[in-house]
Amino acid sequence: MTAHEITSATLKAHLLSHGVNFSIDLFKAVQYEFYENQFVYDQTSKGTTNAHRIPQALLIDKDVVAAILRREESPWSLSIDDVGSIFLSNNGSLYHQ
Image (cartoon, rainbow, N blue to C red; front, top):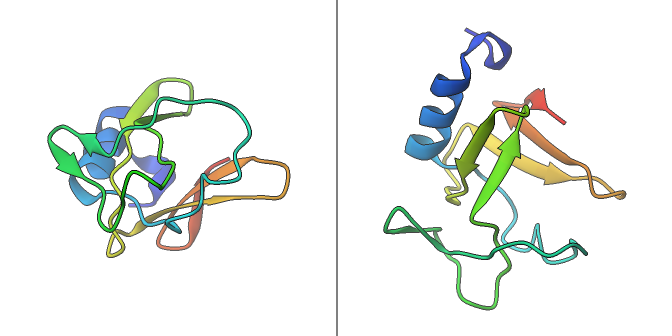
């Protein structure tokens, strides 16, 4: 099953259970404001401190709001390009831009 073949509920469950891999400073340069929270569902993102800017959740595909838990071993990953677009990938395959 590819990332594009999963339902919104399954995507959210995957992101909550596996977390998302991303650079610890990924959101540092983001210019817009967001609610920062390192303790999502009583779980903290691995390796983060109050000095890191990590959003509580992201809106994905207009209908999925998922908590962001940083997990380096996750098959899901986030990246941001030079203009601030956020990309979600699963095992290297682009899922959402």
